[in-house]
Image 1 (tube, one colour):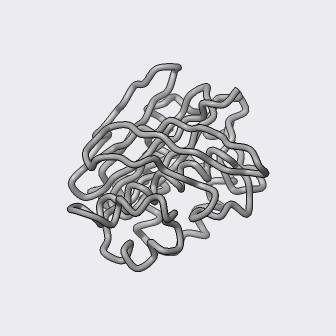
Image 2 (cartoon, rainbow, N blue to C red):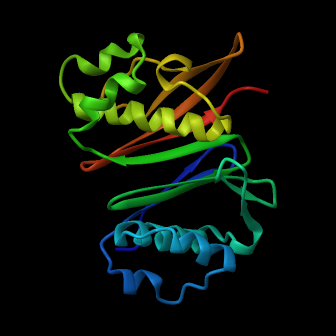
Length: 210
């Protein structure tokens, strides 16, 4: 299946998402890889991760992003030489990119029951709304994607998800939210764009700070 979702947002922001149903052979067809790409691909031993890698390259074509203009920083995050911001994510059967002129982070995650077991590692006590009522797995997964997106936007090591990242309460199914980040006695504010689908969800975190 080709590109399945293209979301245009204010301030030159765009999200592209691809549901992965093709074979590895189909996905790798007509994709030219740089030396850096080949090195990164060799580290992906599982076919599912290799598929995600090639889908991201296909999304680059849609976004007119030249792979030769891309490098990775010390955090392992993609950086465009143009200065435009880029964030990448893939999870099992879905992959996507977000890019624009503002500081951002993007994450996708398929729903899995194990999120309940690992929730204490990332959930703040003020986020207990996620474990009450219906759609617990879905709400926890969405909070996880929000915090992963925030982490990608921050580009700072050592962030404690359960203490420093706080997602404001939301009703399941809404399209937007907000979050706060606490670092060194400072509070940073982010807007959240939620993506909610039957098998996965995702979040685009956009900085509201100067």
